[in-house]
Length: 221
Length: 276
Image (cartoon, rainbow over the protein chains, first blue to last red):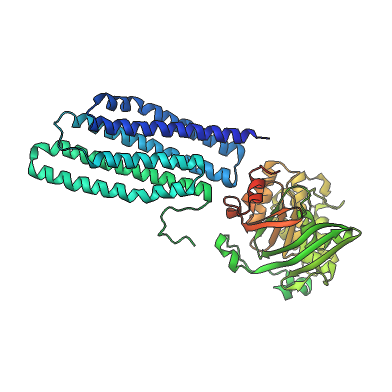
């Protein structure tokens, strides 16, 4: 017999995944506002920011209620702790998407500095990390979560590469300083999105396997 | 400490060593009060406990959890041979208290060293004072009786509530006060171990909180083993938890680990309420 509590946990997971899909879409639209020079996409991201924030509050309230009323233990407790942290990460991903959208609006006032090569790759990687970290939650797949952790370095490398490249453009031509600087901010925000996806993957591993894989260098005896 | 406890009662009234280090990591290095090896227990032909092995560390609270009929109360009662009061019971295996087998021990001495508090408070039909003094009198205590009664009532966090009517009947007290009186009575003979068999199941949350706080305070000087059906109580009040099922010990770990990351799927199923 399925208990009401299990139904509540499942509903909470569905709401978190819905929030995740909003955040994913916001990132995708924000980056494509730059790549496709489409200001409408940037506006759509700004318009949807509140929806993600409202979801954060709703998910928080659901967690509080379940913690207070059900006194969860073991996997249920780990799930609620993980969801609570993932909720914060998804909201921050939404904020990063807004930052990118705002940069996009400023970038679009200028001519394109350079052909976009690394930015779409970086965006694809970061979006994939967010998607897979949430898929790992849905499937209870530790290996998939682990693969997200491994991809974080690639995002960092692309950010460094993009930064070096844009620096040379700025040094050669002061007229492109402003849009180049905004592109660096976009890359920085994408890198942060990768970090949040990494946090989510770590929380998923904690929930499924009961292992805290954050900060592996720390001695936790 | 073990040899002192076996001597005259005057010798045992010195406070035990304070080892109230609640750090979970201390488990492996803690001194052991009870060492149970390959314990089997039978009610007539029916086996109730199967090959149980467990070490109960000194001055810590160990909680026994498990569904009704899993053998946890039976196991608890083997620790001071209370089951011997039931006919046709049989125990096999080894139970060492401070390294000494309890099975050959004088049972009165054993039960003085290993006190017990039951589900329902069971004060004697005597005054509050006499309830606490009783154990001391029959053990031939020669010190200042009133001082020791006061000390025991203070240790049980009851003194302030009863100090002005010590000679009233124990039955005049509330349920929670009666239970604390029973704890004071058990503490009066300075036991090394206190066995608590669902001590809060008949109490309201406020009184339950008092008993749990009391257990925390007593950890300084007493090893406690508690049987409880209340998972939150086990989580709040114990340092170690043992999960039993069908007479077998399934899992034993630091409480903080067992309630967050149990190893055995049966433990997980039980504590998350998905059992069966």
